[in-house]
Amino acid sequence: MDTTVATTGKEGKLWGGGNEPLKASYGKMMMWFFIVSDALTFSGFLAAYGFSRFKFIDSWPIADEVFTHVPFFHGSYPMIYVAFMTFILIMSSVTMVLAVDAGHHMNKNKVTWYMFLTVIGGIIFIGSQAWEWNTFIKGEYGAVQTKGGNILQFGQYETVDGKETFKRVAIADFAKATNPDRVLHERKNGLWYVTEAPLPEFTIEEVLTGLKANPEVLVRTQMLTEEGHKTVLSREESLQQIAENGKLVVHGANLKVNEYGAPIFADFFFFITGFHGFHVFTGILLNIIVFFNVLLGTYERRGSYEMVEKVGLYWHFVDLVWVFVFTFFYLV
Amino acid sequence: MAQEHNLAIFRGLLKFKSNTQKIWGVLIFLSIVTAIEVVLGIYKPEVLMTQVLGMKGLNWIFIILTIVKAYYIAWDFMHLRDETTALRRVIVWTGVFLICYLIFILLQEGGYVEAVFRNGFVKNTF
Image 1 (cartoon, rainbow over the protein chains, first blue to last red):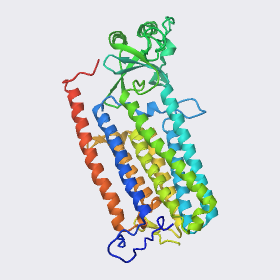
Image 2: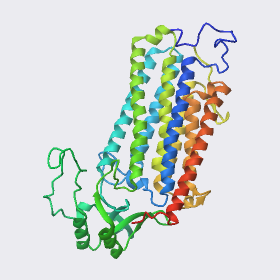
Image 3: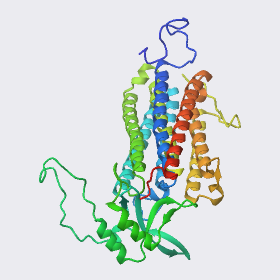
Image 4: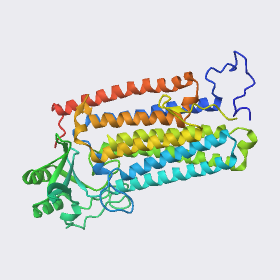
């Protein structure tokens, strides 16, 4: 018990750890050590993301066009869902800090309830993130990847409220699959133990035929214009791009291809939000353990709820990281 | 074992009566900041899209607001406000110094690679 609370039996002694210039218990100090090193890990990832973004600064995907979905609602609502997720995480941070405060007053009942609410908040957050990943992986419109690895998307000009706007069009809306006979090569047949990537729904030829048959459909490249919009090609350029450079039809995103733009955007999205999600998951587990310890009266008998505070530090740190992930993936 | 809490935020401008009240106060503040970020992110006012120090003005606003939020999470939720000054400095300065260095090195390099593409040494537009 002594190891978890501040007393070490060395109080007042200059040597052997008796001198405590920082006035923090061992456990809390170690949690801060961990948090500082973990913060450096996350900033390493985010700075690497910044590197790739600066590298492709003139063609980076626009977050508002990528994350537009809200569960149970159709239509385009950029930012709304992720703002909700941010709010949930801040809320669960608040219940956590309230649990710490109740712990200082040795109020077991309140600590129990606040820990419970914190766990619920964490579960809602991680569920939302799973949904967000699922939507991102499934994709929406589909795109064509060129030989150079660039992404070409499709759309057409429509007049909405007297203003001409570029509306995205899904490949499935104008291209027709004509050659369904092509079978996916699996490792169990043909050349053994050799596999291929899942077949795209359409071939480039089918997309080209569809594009020729629909004169209003245009190609949009990833290059950003002066105003920060994606460049829309003319009809001739559109046909030429697909015919000359088109290589693969992609739908959705994974670690290799990404219909929203640079593949590295998807890689970083999966890696950084995944690593953060893993932290949330670990935090939920720790919170559950502490919750049951509170319920069993472990800390009541120990005479100190410091463990709630230490786990709380970790939980707030997860929230802190999310604040930065939110900014650099969804806002900036 | 009720502990001493520093109950003033905004440099003493706002003083709370209890720690619980302070927590709710900070929540309200963080929610307001997040709401501002979201509204700016959706509407993207034209005025803020001009370049300031190599980046869009709006992006600077987002980054500053993020650091403000991080400050209040660390100071009030993680109780850094109540720790000794030395512990606070050990945590914050270490991180800030190393992170600034890392960001500088990587963004500098990213900008250089971008220039290689832009100046046509390596072609990636096909």
